[in-house]
Length: 354
Image (cartoon, rainbow, N blue to C red):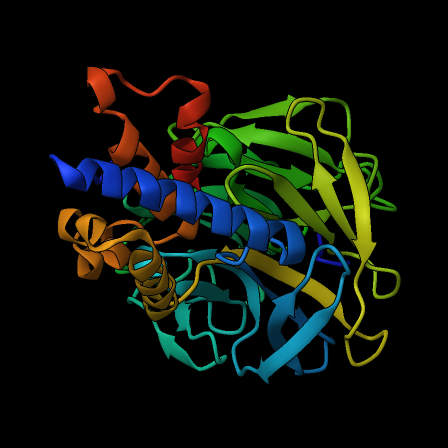
């Protein structure tokens, strides 16, 4: 079992000119985001990745999944085998060297987060970390190198306490990747490992019951080796967490469990590095504020009076939820009609806050 390789909304009651202002703004926001998205991809999400060379060099950087380009930001003292986006959009990592949690800035600066200690000392470590915004806590899987088991824990949102949920896999069950736990489409918690104890082939995707820890296999294998998982809330992705060369980036079908390669990682210093973990981030509130200021100026002052710009970043931390807010508030009261199912799709993407 070695690692080779809330519904938190605020009701806005626009009236008169504010309704039409919001409608115009909603259309404008969606139009601009669609234009930007079609040319450069989702501007609200940055994929943060960690990698190491088994010799003490621990990298932190970003990844373009379309091209596979890794861009190093910094080296870190902690070895992050698990990453997630925690409260307030903060990157939280689990350090394999100490077993404790750290907050990681977008510049790579690290600081201890909470006081929780691991169930067993290193080299045992948390291999997966996923934060649930609705539950307000983290879920983490812990690989015990002595007992040779993998167990699921709940960690308080402030990082100060933890509790055992259940065992995920017993002794010598297979190969377990780092970065192997993530909330994906529909708010499902996903996990993967390979039962091939020799070559770590055909890793299987599992849905995890967060109450009991029960694993439900999705399909009969992803067709890949073990993967470090990450998601933007609508699509599940994986990074080859075993190989040091030709490291694949995969899109995973959550219905069949099949992984399809979309690119190959480039930009690592050499072929001595393995991917440890990845997570989708969101832009700084100031970035969203600048975007909204520009759009509000273009969209008219009525909308500005109906929605307080200064409150948007805290309540709606992603660009598509801002767009959804404008679209929803501009339309849902038009004639008293609620939004249709298809129109709610943009709002459903708020699930990416998990």
